[in-house]
Amino acid sequence: MSTAAPQQLKPKDFASDQEVRWCPGCGDYAILKGVQKALADMGATPENTVFISGIGCAARFPYYMSTYGFHTIHGRAPAIASGVKLANPDLDVWVVGGDGDNLSIGGNHLIHALRRNIDLQILLFNNEIYGLTKGQYSPTSKKGTRSPSTPKGSVESPISAALLALGAGGRFIARGVDTQQKQLPGVLQRAREHRGTSFVEILQNCVVFNDGAFEHFTAKDVATDRQIFVEHGKPLRFGSENDQGLRVRPGTLELEVVKIGENGISEDDLLVHDERNRTLASMLAAMEAPLFPVAVGVIYCDPRATYGEQVRDQEDSDSGDLGSLMMSGQTWTVAG
Picture 1 (cartoon, rainbow, N blue to C red):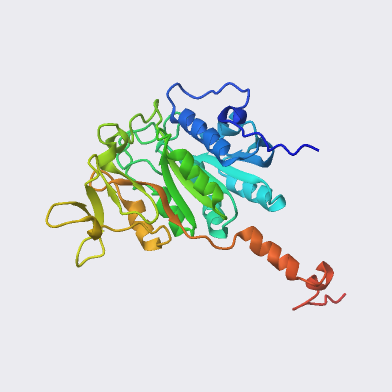
Picture 2 (picture 1 turned 30 degrees about the vertical axis):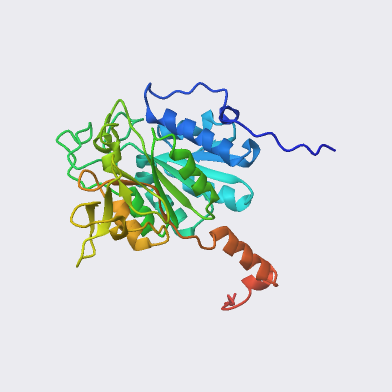
């Protein structure tokens, strides 16, 4: 009997033999690389991992992973993933979908997966456009977006994916950027470690139909001043000189950006990130550039019992059989 430790897998071990077929330069390539690295770093195993997707560019993801996979129908990936997880709790179940797939036709399924707190990792690739169907505006498209379906510009206000997830009762909310390969695998690892539904919004560039949608805070020359990587227990500071921070404006319940060293401001005046604080999470998730830095990292994490755990507890505590249960309580006799 061998006592050798299992061999540590590498990112390439999670790559399938299928040709990756996204547009050249698509942000999905970077996300695929980040996920494969994260799985290797976490010590995941292909035979215990499954990726489930709906419809859209992001939905091709399972084909490119050397794991189990299921390419389902539009918007229904969270529902099918819920069934997979409940049927086999030992599986590591990931849901992959775009902003259209998860927030439009699949919005209802996403909300209830978050509300139930099923032990899934949900990755939402947000490029603020419908890519597969040639560039129509999506639920996250900015007001004024011109597209084939809004030639004069969208008049709708966009959905904030992170705020929606918080409002639905999500217990783990995080945000990443496709090109941030140093931070993204760590965020994905935190998502997998969380027991319950983990929701990770990944801002992803569509080079064909919505190129540069996030450049105003992701471009190299502005990223450090317009993003803040939040970490539990650490002061909320950022900037190219790391001399800017966030505090609550005195006398209000609003955040403001301050500069350390000006007007007597020191690090002690800054907010410290508490990922268990739902109110703070809502404020961070709502920040938009250029007035505020965009928050990336784990914005909220406050675990509770998962749906599967609660269902199994019910089953374990039930001493009766199904027939007795069905005949208990209010019953009616139908006369002939």
